[in-house]
Image 1 (tube, rainbow, N blue to C red):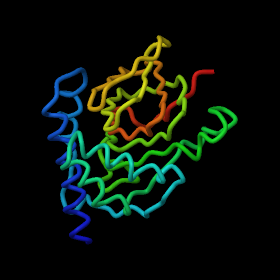
Image 2 (spheres, helix red, strand yellow):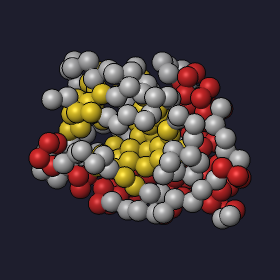
Image 3 (cartoon, helix red, strand yellow):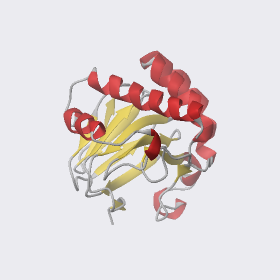
Length: 206
């Protein structure tokens, strides 16, 4: 076992736990309760096969801005960034989401099948979205919490108007709620969590 990676994965999960525990908002109690139920012991640790994506060209800028919000979390992300397995939804394409979207989008699991711990019907990870992108209306059975670590992102719920959410805001989506995200000049880096019913992937609104 890679002891340094195991310790750094725990550092990252702990930094997320502490950051969320210091905030109030819909979904926080559910996320922290489910996180407490996860097996994060040595026997459950796994080393993902690292994989990069084009969107990671924005990661240094995003980590730099995260330093202004939560220096410990920014340092924890930086400590393991080379070990992440970055993913994209197989059903997403530039033809559906706009030219250049797939070069400006990606997500990683910290807890989940492709993360450091497999998880029990629970996913915890990071999302990256490059500047000037529109991740249009989608939905899924899993309840979801987003915690934007960067500023300037805009969010829509239930097909409503987009509203800018500040760095460090908490954004909660109950099961099957339509939601969408836009970026302006800044890339988005956000913590995300699916608390249960995680087997069904997100579906774009047709």
